[in-house]
Image 1 (tube, rainbow, N blue to C red):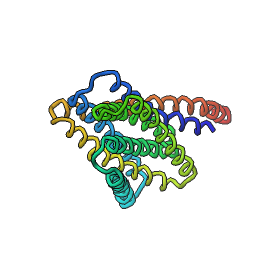
Image 2 (cartoon, rainbow, N blue to C red):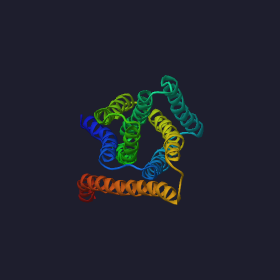
Image 3 (cartoon, rainbow, N blue to C red):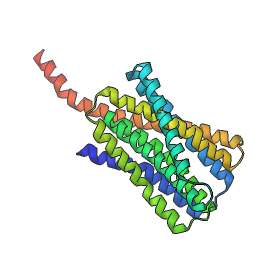
Image 4 (tube, rainbow, N blue to C red):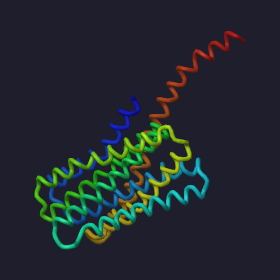
Length: 267
């Protein structure tokens, strides 16, 4: 039951990060340059999640063909979802464009939930690091969504309602993934992580960066923002793993100490 509430808490973080970014966009004047930099930073963070956390876990526990197949399946799933969204949203009215943006973000947060739920089934420490990384990435994404909706003259009340609904997608998928995978074989858990890695990679390269390029032309600041996002997640990941590792070691030391004393007395 403790893990259940932990999954709920971690799954709410990316959605709240998205909501916080949206509220910033509501309160400050947005510019194409700021939007471009924010999306490059978010892309760097997402690539960091894949490169530092997801793929190393898969490489240590799966055969190469499993990784290739599941990674490709994740990327294909994201592309297929985008195709469905584009076909279901006829071009023309601002309302249809608004809902296309909404559905795209909902899909991204659903992927975040899948990742956190899968990570929770593998290890609590992994889930904490993944939730922290996606919270950082979803802040600029939430900013970009509301900025786009403001440019399309979507009413303020509807923008806020859309932002408030986003955490539900991440929470729902995280719980589904956790319930399905918590007692599953380890192979299934790491296949799911590799699947999520493929999904996130396509999202960062084909969605976030494309949107950044559509906002305005890249500059050196854009490149620095991308590199900075990756470096930021690397620092967050290392810091959290160190802190969590120390706590685990202390707990293990307290348990092992009486055992060692018994062995000494027995000798």
